[in-house]
Length: 143
Image (tube, rainbow, N blue to C red):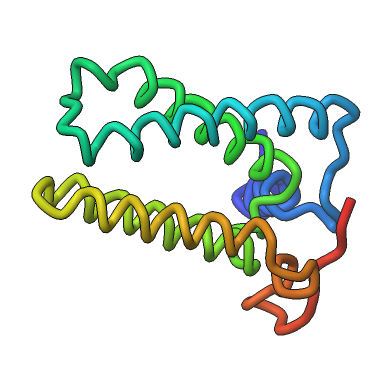
């Protein structure tokens, strides 16, 4: 029977490994998922100014959500500490902006455009910023 300390240590090791895990399939999977995510998101954001409703955008919305969740799951599997790094903080900000779009349907387009801008900046900012840990104050190790 595991003790509380051992269980806590195991959970910490699982979520926050010494260095990020590396999966041979992660890079091609992320490339495919990111491409699907961008294309589907473009359909959603592009359909909004033309009055497309949920039923017309359902497939694109589902693809956007599913691909986004899978991308996030891969990053979490590598190291959950990414949520405390520049790229993770950008992701959390993007999710907050998308949530505001859901809460304020009349202003959905500006919120979704802001989320798109944050996602673009988060993906293309210098590596030192993307991997900067707000927990330790320095760049995290890459796999």
